[in-house]
Amino acid sequence: MLTYAFLGRGRKSRLRATVVIFGTAGFVIPAVIGAVSLTNRVVADPYLYAWPTSFLLGAGENGDPVWYIVLVFGAAILSNVGLYGSVGFVLGGAWNWIRPKQ
Image: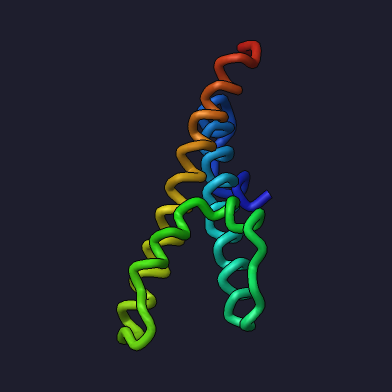
């Protein structure tokens, strides 16, 4: 619903809405996984498949400065947003192409 407040109407806005929804999911999923892992609980492997860019977290080591850890974590999340947004762009474009024109 939030996306419709900022986007216009029409075929292009449906594509933008799809990209925004997928990008938001790409942000929320790693944030939730990161919050769960901060509580010292082990995240199961099937959930990590929802965060395909989590391999970037291997760049940080124990004892690194906080700013470096935040930078690595931010890069992992933002690349996941870009990846999910790209998938949303492809799926939204395909949906607009398949859907009959009005």
